[in-house]
Length: 188
Ligand code: HEM
Image 1 (cartoon, rainbow, N blue to C red):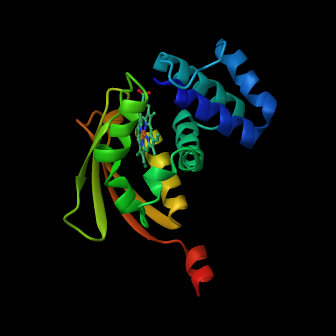
Image 2: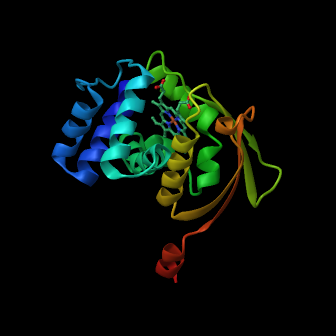
């Protein structure tokens, strides 16, 4: 797993839980830290950090990963504005994941192992998404999608109809977006 993922986790943990918390997590996980963004690290290290955060915060590991994904998205939007600028909706942004975003990521971070998503766009109201990865990081995908919806001031209703973790051949979601109440109020 590329070091940028660890860098983002460190930044999110430090911001949300204070400067010392990250060092505490490294210690609890028995890791040295010092991740460089283009370096490659074993994904087991990420899982150990997530397990340490899960016990420190008293929340299940998948919740930690989902929270991390959601909070990481504004940082990604700051670092890579070009991926976000052309879009006004989460749906349109997500539809560029395979062809633009993760394609660029593979060029920027040599050896990046990014997932491929399949999209079903037959309905204008509901976006069908499927995901296959040996890493089974569907909680990360959900968090990132929630973070993207925050960015575009939308709310997203998730239906996770199939899941790799339940032994299904893929994860499948039905996603319905609508303008966030707060942004409707602001626009009025
Ligand atoms: C909502 C949008 C996004 C979703 C759902 C998403 C989903 C994911 C998931 C689930 C992974 C874990 C790898 C796996 O499952 O095998 C991943 C990896 C990654 N993604 Fe994305 N991603 C999104 C947007 C972005 C953006 C905007 C960037 C910007 C740079 C990015 C960069 C990366 C990188 C660097 C990795 C790590 C690859 C590796 O360690 O080998 N992603 N993404």
